[in-house]
Length: 283
Image 1: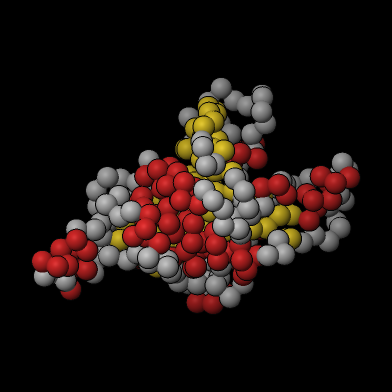
Image 2 (image 1 turned 180 degrees about the horizontal axis):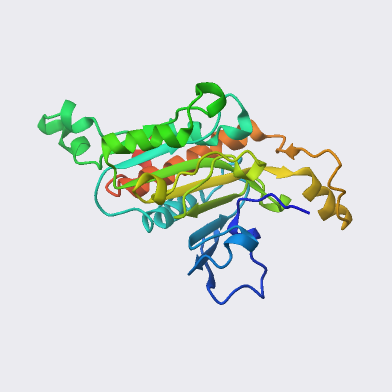
């Protein structure tokens, strides 16, 4: 039975994985699992190639919590470890803003602080602080069914023009464990294939395709119905039975608040001179 998941943490059992896979755990506001894969030996069997995958698990992202600031700061610290120290950064929101479970990317991109244009438009001493911020661009271009253009084609063209040092791609993910639905964030340096978790794979966004590092960030917003039934009954499902993707009842609130938390993390990671209160003022 095929299990649909984008999460690396669900692909590796607690024991018995390859010697090329290294797993460590840490975290305070989140329970963080850090998976490093040295080679592509797990690519065919588990669908995960060489790279680093960080999973942050906590309380439901659809609710505000007392440690929200700590969550944002911890997310920013994890993101910062992937981002080059210098150069422009392009933040890309993948997905369809008209379909709520798929709107995480566009809603996050709308909250990322775009600063690439500031140095050209602001030059007074009072505005010097703004012009000192890192040059960041933000883009969300819809999906193939809306535009007739592969997102990877658009992003590649933008990278050719802007020449960023890295791309941060945000997308909604699929998971196989219901307990991780809506309370997990994954960060990886292996790029992303939009729609892969729901068997609607589009052309990948990766360093191999774009020529710059691609940092993929996502939250699982859907889970496979066959997987839910199997977890409740312990039985495998006939492959010819109809299947569907299930999303949480509060998906609108989850998408809104998860996108805000991710945007918090991205803004804090890219602009360390900004405080949490500075970033909160953007929303």
